[in-house]
Length: 352
Picture 1 (tube, rainbow, N blue to C red):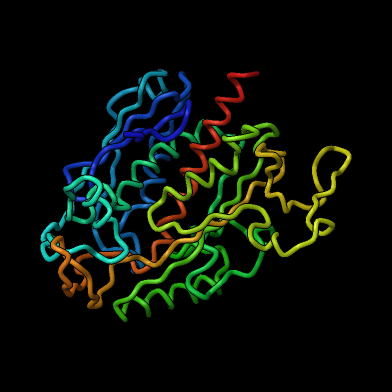
Picture 2 (picture 1 turned 180 degrees about the vertical axis):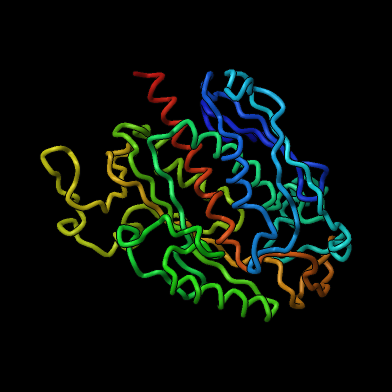
């Protein structure tokens, strides 16, 4: 139940980490829109495993195959069906995990909720599901040509990119494997992730996202505030533990006289601590937010856990896992942002 993402622009997905395939159905996409399928594939390649030395070495091409809703390169207005086949599953890596619950994974909660669970890579709870979201977001991005959505890694563990996004060239984000647009900080992050991996451990981090050129007026004033929907989307990502926009938690330390964004005659503001959203509605300024990711729960170290009988057992992670998820999370954050924004665009148009 409750699987679709979005209100008018909706994505419904299926599949498991070690099943035959992943896939989804997109509904509500405007008709007669030219789609660049190579650009969609490019976005998937940014998320796919095995792309560098600091991510999981699972080898998946992640090639998307569209089944419906596109004719002669254009959307038809009917549901867009797609599939991404799994090709490099190694289910035997999880044979030790048949009865035991991995600490801080979804194993225990899925088993208690459904009475059954797919122990092969977590099944539906695997972050492999996010490949579907990237397809949905890549389509949505092309419906928002005037809007720029750029995310980047802003911290790994205790290593923080101290510069504000305004001082960065975000076009440099893809120039290194950790997706941090500052070369010196990026190298520190890469070295640290490699060190953590050698120790059989994992580390968390943050992704910052900047949205430019969103028009004034998107978002609803009460239960569907723009920032609330963005927060819901980001908190749907595996391993996300926090979301803040604008001044975020730092704003709670300030006085109102410091925090208020004073207006210019044209309606823009002199500062943007509101993060581009006021009263739940976009105000035309940059929308920016930060997403916090926990360390990956699977460790190559021995830990105590329990099995389905409640007995204490030892467990050590096996298989191919990310030592840090944030580099591959960048396109996922962008994709979900695009889907939220397109949804609000369509809602805004419907009530014009």
